Length: 239
Image (tube, one colour):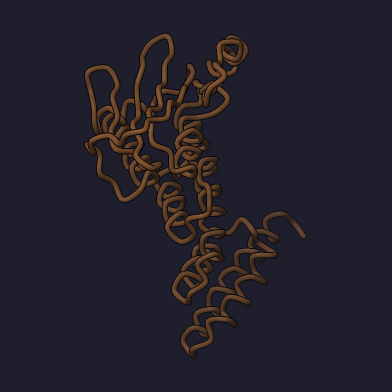
């Protein structure tokens, strides 16, 4: 069988599985619909229509962890296809469905897809920065992204200041119990300052704990929402 016929057969199987799932749902059998979609996915794991339908059925019929897993898989597939807005949406949905999930890797993949030239710069500076790290909670942004650092602070519910510096700029992110409440970068603060900070990819960071909370300038449902919204706004400003 030629590659063309194999591909045509695979498309036909996907369409059949989607129709079967719709019938099962119509007659009130969501579990059978999910089983049918799962079988089809074993044959066509990279099918976006199948995964989108599986995500939809799982989320609608109270299988949030299953839906979240498919959201992560969809985010990867969308990144490969340069549909980065869809990837953002699926990452955010995965976090909302299952808060235990870390989407740091996905966020970093999206940023690399938007700025492939930064990977070379980061690799060149890694060894230079590694020797300058302090013994406190600190790191090299070429190795540990700002998203990783924010995730660690959020998970530990820490209050304090995350400082990021490189040869060109410096910024600070303020946390109360792991939640971002303010940011400063150059002459900008609040949301505008944070939008500048998410673009910092090289340099080092250092986190200093604080015994007192900070005034709230940034209000967001979650750090994840704030990051995704800021990245989207940065892209819109550059368009």
